[in-house]
Length: 195
Image (tube, rainbow, N blue to C red; front, side, top):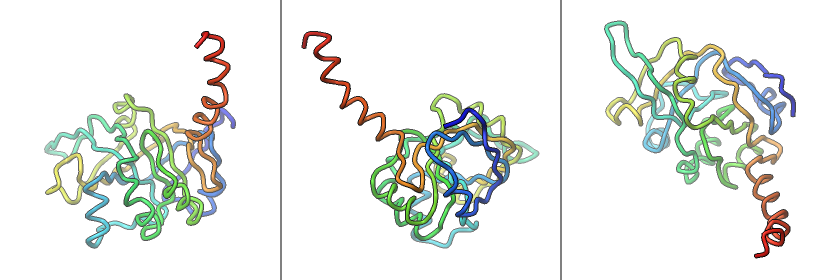
């Protein structure tokens, strides 16, 4: 793990995704797509109007405002990614994104798909939605009939991040490491508290 931020451009090649390790800090310039629960469902059922190969897919329901110049993104915070766990493995297999981004991590099936197909999961800090919006230079939208949070948004970003690689394509998982450490340390903590 290093404090140096790796500056990447989307879409990512499989090699670029596989070069990333948990703890790496990364930022992105290029195109980012948002998909939440309903967007994932629709993508699995219908033709998707964009190419998601190597894409950065953000689990996000942005706060937007339509203006005479197009869409203004006011805030773009992450949503809880585990909600997409039921579809994510199949989504990764079908569309081959290079990275997923959200909050809270994902489950074992997603971890296995990241390893098999060469992708990573990135942790965006909850509460930093305005920071994300500041990196968005323009936005387009598909599937607006799903509502603005669930629509497929296309963000053109410059230096979005930094974010941390929380799950990599080698089985590394920061969430699991923290859980394992807590389980290891808990007996000593309880003993120290007299419980």
